[in-house]
Structures are given as structure tokens and as C-alpha cells.
Length: 452
Image 1 (tube, one colour):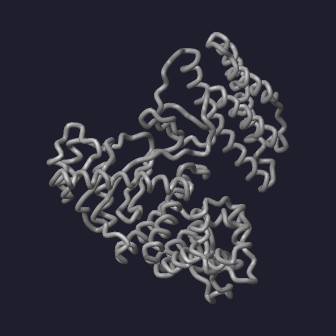
Image 2 (tube, one colour):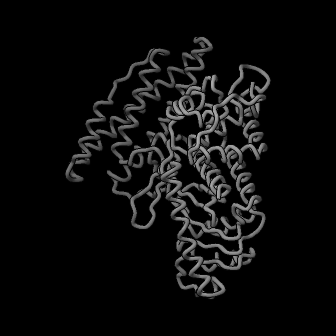
Image 3 (tube, rainbow, N blue to C red):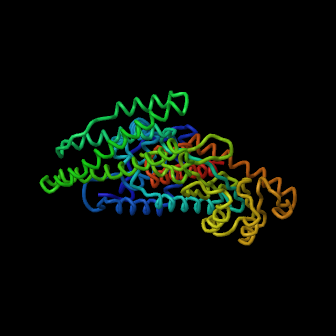
């Protein structure tokens, strides 16, 4: 059985006199003033397969949303979230658990939070931004926009480590699948691991080439063993019980994915290492576990393996919008899109908007001004006169200084809400993680604005 709210408020201890506890109470009051948000989350949970009329009493939609906010506000793992819900009177009260109530396990918390789709969280974010605009937390008349890179939860990729990962995972799945069908294979995991280590310590390309050839050979052997295992499992499928058929289908699906991923890794290694070809970034796979991860290079800084994220914030620090495109698009290609989205979210164009220098182009300037924006400032004009961007040099300097504030907002999101690195798997989960972090940050901004 699933509901939006508890029918009866639980008995909770009185709030403590601590600044953070007061902020959490203010966040709770903000969420209580937006019941539509909880209804949206409830519909998402129901569509994820939870029957609202049957079964035991599960977490309410309100509790799930608040647990997500508590997790992201403190950058907790699910294990830490479970502990603090059990241990902290403040967070028990915030998430709607009474003094005598049992708190959900970390697996229950994870299952419920991950059931909220990124589309639902995007809708929640828009509602929260609308609430902030209606209550004068920000007026949306000034906006600043910038991009940053967010790491996926993968190690820095090398050809040898990717090949070793392929062998390790295929060996593991083959070993588990053997109990469902009679097939044999030779486990080359140790050999692949040794070759990868030798490649790492080799001093020259001449020393690495024969090692790579052997590692590629081993990976190909494991791929062939996996292909044979799929054929054997499919032949055995009609003779198995229903439960075993479900397990076989899962193994076959896993094999098919990792066979394709392994072949991509082998192909790019042969092209790059043995044939000396420069493989384009969009054709590379940097992780067999997170294939959605892109290669992001910003200026002369270290390479990021994750995604490029575009943010729009206001004077209050409120995050109006977050955009997570695939690939590594140039900043200039998103400038007009970000302004169009701002108009849609805030109900009209901002009077002034400030961009980082990477967004600069005369075409962007002209198109954004056509949308009704009076002052469009790029921190580096790149040949565009100041008088074309702003009504005066003083306004240009003010907006350029105003734009610098988004660097602090990005730093705050990364340090406090875990936006620097996403630990959730798949691209949809990546989006959901970042949207959850921005929702938590905005609720805190609203709470602090009301406390002034």
C-alpha cells in the first residue's frame, strides 16, 4: 500500500535549538507548502510497479522525497542515511518517522529513492523554483550561466585496464552460469591481470606491443567462451524450470552486453596501440560498466570522464536550471537554449544575463537579445564591443563580476551536495543524482532566505 502522506502525523521529539536543525525544519515547511510535488512523486512510485491499494504499508511519497533530500544535503551513502535516520531525532522528524517507528533499511531506501525518474525530479525542481520566485527568494531578472564537468564513478581508463576488466567480468559471469548448463572454459583472469600490470610498468612502446597482443588474444578467447556459453544456455532453456529460465535470461542478457563491450574495447585497442590510429573521443568507450561516460576536456585542466553539465543561477544562489547533454558540446552551442529554458521556467526573459567566455559568439548575442534580454555579457568579449553587450561599461563590469559568483555556486554544489562525482550507475541515474542534489541545494537556499 502506498500513499502520498501519512494519515496521522507521528509522535516526534521537540526540535533542538541548533542552526542546522532550524534549517531542516524550514526545508520541511517548504515541502509541506508544495503538496503537488509529493503527488508527482507518488504517481512515479506507482508507475514504477508499486500497487497503491495492496500490500504492506511502505514508505510514503513524502518520506521518499525527504529521504532523498536528507541524503543529498549531507552527501551520505545509503548506509549512512539508514544510520542517521535511526540515530538522529532531527532527521527522523524531518523524514516523518516517529519515536517508536522502525526506519527503513538501506536497501529499502535505495529501492524507493532510485524509483524516482529524472523526469519526475526535473518536474519537482521546476515547482521548487516556481515557489522560490513566488515567495521573492529570487526574481529571475538576473541570471548567470556556466558549465562544469562531473565525474562518473569509474577509474581513469587505459586500454590495458579496460581489457583486463573485460576478462575479469566475463570470467565471473561464466563461473556463475556454469551451474545452469554444462560448458567448460579456461579462466584467464590471472593471466590478463599480469599482462595489464606488465604493460603499466613497461618502459617503451616496443616492450608494450607483445604484451598488448597477448592481452588482446586472451580477451578474444574469453569472448569466444562467452559466445559458446550463450549458445549452450539457450539450448538448455526449454528443459529448465521457470525460475531457472529467468536466471538463464539474465545471464544471456549480461553476456550479450559484455560481449559487445569487449569487442568495442578490443577494436579501439587494436586501432590505437597496434595500428597507431588516433581514435576519436566519440568512438571510444571509457568504461564497460558506465558506457555513457564522455571524455570531457576543459582548457588545460585534467580530463574528466563523466558528463558536461550546464547550470543557470540567480542572485540568491538559487539554481534555476541544470542541463546534462550527451557528448562534449561547445559552451557556445548551449547559450540560446539555456536562455530559452530560463524563459520557460521563470515565465519571461531575464533583464540581464551573464555568461562565461566560452559562450561568446555574435550570433548568440543577437539571438538572445531578440528574446528580450537587455544586457547580454560574456566575460571575454572576443571582439564584441562592450556597448553591444551592455548599456554602459559600468553595467558590463557589474555583470562580469556577477557572473563570477556562479563559480562559488558550482563549488558549493560539489563540496556539499556531491555534484563533483556521481556514484549512481547508468545515465538516467546520473541525471537523477544531479537533479536530487540541485533540489536539496535549492531547498536550503529557500530556507536560509526565509530565515533572514
